[in-house]
Structures are given as structure tokens and as C-alpha cells.
Length: 530
Image (cartoon, rainbow, N blue to C red):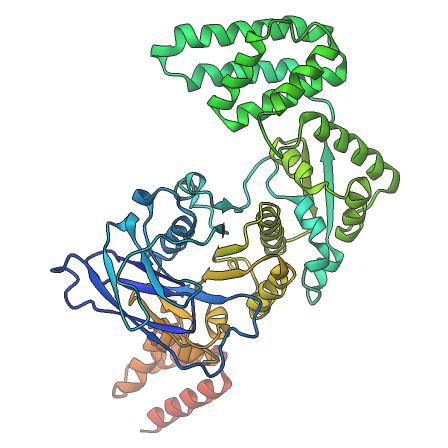
């Protein structure tokens, strides 16, 4: 599979290849004058696939300067493989059918490309594989661009700030798949807060505020008035319910509010349209909640959520587990199918997890694994057998020693889920020299040139020069100080340079490299002798 796309600022189109079996060459010579751009497809003679020993069908590392479009490419890739609405797809998909014919699906980008090659079909064909996409980023500045993922069907597994900021349930249940070579993971401790009593009056007021701010003023008089009557009825009748029934109804109100205006309107209409008063007694509210839940297949009911939380609270108070593995055993003892229920409880803010005594880098790594585990399990439960995983600068908070293990740890983690998938493609964006040098051969994609590069096993100086296009390893401050030294040594010695010579000698003495320091001191002595 490959993704063809048009680049910004009039640059020639490019192809992001997700296979080692084919080479894709873009004819960029006439991309401005021609209505379509030709992509030549050539089969690569099979010797030994570079990814045949990996638990993914492809791994691609995207690099480039800030603003070159790394994150946008990952977002577009996620949207395009799952997009149901062609007019919003940003990338063209090149794919191979079961008979080995290469097809092009680019309806969403207005038929911008055409394929050329002996194994290609000239007739464009809709991408037939059912894909799921996962997007994860450590950047706090991508919230606006990530909003468009919601309509595409992509799972945005980026940790969210505030309540229920990560899936502790997914993390605990993935404990057996976490890397064993990182000591803090074995020692990691987490805390948990469980809410089993939700105030119905507080939820009613939150719903009332939500209704006032989410309905246009033109329609507010009639629509909001009828929904407000339902809320007034709730305020009065809720006092006659048992504490459990009040909590169940409060959970359903909170869930409808979080699901959006349509879901909330539907719940309130159902309450106001019922012939019997749903608040009359606890039996009637139970019947009402069962009726309302029937419209949502496979979604945990409020009763299931509350029952599990009560059981979990009892289990935790009795055994007081603190480690990931201990929590995992406790969760499974409560219910074998607890994960979707707890994740819904996390979304509703009824259960909150806290990391104890962990650094930001340690938390970032655990969140990455928790998010991937949750999303991959979600796909497996929905029988989605193909996945695209896009991780944007996942190594951002990691020490260089962790970055050395970054790719291997992710691949080992994904391998635990491979049996549930026919295809897994992994795309990562990075600024890290170490990650770039650890990438498999010819799997570095340069967004600036639109071509695949090879940084495999290059040293830091070579990576900086040949991959990142930076000629000097030192930063600009160190470079300026070094220029002061070299400029002084290159000038003829004058009678008034004694004080300057002392300053230069002091600066040379502070150079950390012994070889460079001794060389420059020798040059200084020779200059003085002259």
C-alpha cells in the first residue's frame, strides 16, 4: 500500500510508500501543466524484505523541519485510510488486490494521479480494505487539527488533560505486554479514585447550562422550553428515587451531555414523551433506562457501570493493590470483560487514575502504551483486521538511552496484538537523531524532498549532515565562541594583544574535548612564539 499526495508551495507531488515490494516514482516534471500526475510502479526483486522479521507490515519514520508538514501528513494518512466521505480525503491510496493488480483510489483528491506500470490497472477502483487508524501525539499544540479526526472514524488516543486523562484500565490490562527492560515500569505505582455516587441535581444544572449554550437563539424559545420542562420535572421527582436510581439517572444525563446536543435532546425527549411518569418509582426509572439503552448496541449501561465500580471499590479497599500487575489481577477478578465498562467510566469521569512519583518522560511512555493497547483492543472487538498507527514525536520526553530502545519497545508491544490483525502499518514522526539512525534501511521519509532516505546505522555526525542537512554538530552559541578563538589565532600577533590572549587561553581551557583543547593550546603557543 502507498499514499500519494500533493505537497504545499507548488512542490512536486510525492508518494509515501508503505511497502518494500514496490518502488513508486512520481513524474513531477509536468505536475503544474497536466491535470493528473503519473506515478510509475515497479516491482522490486524480492531478496529479503526489510520488515519480514518485524511484527508490522511496514514501518516508516517521517522527518523534516518544523512547519514542513510532518504532523499534517500523519493526520491526512489516518483520515484517508478510514474516510467514508471522498470529498474530504486528502491522500490518494495505491493498493494491491488479491490477484496482485495495483489499483488507485483518489476520488477524494479529484483524480489527481494515474498509475503506470505492467501490474497496474488503468481503471480506478475503490479501496476495499476495512482499516482502522490510531493517532497519538505528545504535542500540546495539536488540539485544533485533531478535531477533524472525530468525523473520520480515527481513534485519537492522545492523552487528554484534566479528568480521565488516560486509560488506566487499558494500561493495567496491558501490563503483561509492557517492555521488561525498563526498570521503572516494573516498579510503577498508580492510584485510583472511584465515584459511585453522582449528584443528580448537579447533573441537571449542568444539562440546563449546556442546553442554553448549545441551541441557537432562533430555536431556543420552543425547543429549549419543552426540554426545560423535562428538566423541571426531573428536579421535582428525583427526590422520590432511591440513591442508586438517582445515581443511575445522573450517569445517563452526564453521558448524554458528553455525547453532544443530539444525544441529550433524545434523552430528554424520551423522558418528556413517556406516558407514565418515569420518576414515579424506582421500577419505572429502571424500565426507562433499559428502554433508552436499547438504542445503543454494545455500549455499557449505567447499571453495568455502577455495579462494576461498586465491586471494584470493594476489591481495592480489601486488597489495596498498588502496582500495575496487581491492579490487572484485581480488574480481571472483578469481571473478565471489564475493559469496555471501565473505559466508559473513565470517559464519564467516574474513575480517575493517578501516577505516583513518575517523571514526565516515564508518564509519557506509559501513556503511549496504554493508548495503543486501548485502541488496538477496540479494533479487535469490532473485528477490524487492518490498522494504521501514526505516532507523532512519541519520544519527545525521553532520555537518549530510552530513545535507543524506542522503536524496539513499540514493535515488541505491537507484537502482542499481531494475532488479531491481518495488516498493521506503523508511521512515526521524529526529530531524534537516534530514532532516525535506528530506522530500518530506506524507511526514512523526508517531507521536504518527498522522498525515502536511508539513515540506517549512520553515526550522529553523518545523520546530522546527510539526513537533517545540518553541517555542524555544535549549537550556535558554542559555534560563536569557537569562531572567537579561531579568528584570534588566524590574526597576526600585535603588541596590544596580551590581554586578549589571556581571555582566549581561558576560553580554550574550558573546552570539554581534550583533543581539541590540546590542539588549540598548541596553536596558541606557536602563535605566541612567532
